[in-house]
Image (cartoon, rainbow, N blue to C red; front, side, top):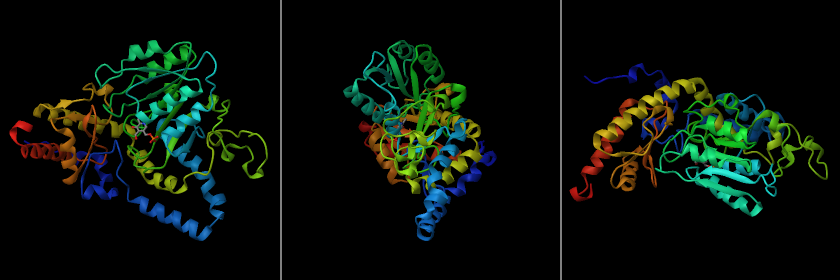
Length: 394
Ligand SMILES: Cc1ncc(COP(=O)(O)O)c(C=O)c1O
């Protein structure tokens, strides 16, 4: 008998909020979360404010927006109020963090894993010109991060450990707690990239005692491109002086003082120039839905659905490049079948939206709005595509 758990799935009540779900099998929230229909209204509201309030919109709403949205994001990771600033992307967040430190002394080592998102590596590699010494720990299997080797690399010369919470390629969940504990024992600080965790895997910045956390809203938070967040541990936040700074970080920005900056308090202390107002407005409907749905509920469903995808991949004999241990698995299942890149292309033409990454395969990422039936559809479509190939190429 067919199991129909989807009728009991409370989270499916949000399906109607996402127009694209009516037309596609949307399994790509690890890359771009579906757009909530509330974004239409948010964008209209923004245009109306600009059209009717003009420059007064800054004082009435826009100036505060960057911090308000920061708090909305912060509430999803148990961040205290005013500890989260908003920016355009995560690479910029790294630059803000880096600008708080001096790499000319003996403590100038930056330790990370080669499973980080490449943009983060490109940024830190480039900081070698400023004196940073990069130590990159290599993966053994292309799926996991060798925790012991990473911990051993974090020593008294280590300044920063920029590391992904969940690995984008494989959905492996790093042992953030162990990494942070080791870093603190030797006087180093951790910059946790929660892009692939926040919204699908629980994150509690206070329980972790992490120093910095950053990510964007366009994936699991359904917030669209153009908004990233930077959490700074409040005691650190009051002391650090980012040199990548600007008038938003000034104690009296509207005095337009000449000379060096006088820093204000977080979160504006970590901002610099004019914020991306339309993107901040577009981010709010998704954040509201994820908050209402609840990350604990989303995580429980994600574990059930990713398990099912692994089960189906096993039945077909396809390689799973994602941890089987649910404790160590985020919201994505990377499946490498023969010709997986071409399979991915053909899935897109059949409205099964997924993506493909080297050393990973086809990434499938069910989110709270996906039905169980969609998982079966996606995998059946892969099989159908593969049947079109001559036997030798399968
Ligand atoms: C873990 C992780 N970090 C960072 C990024 C992107 O960084 P940025 O916001 O600078 O484009 C991604 C994906 O786009 C990611 O998966």
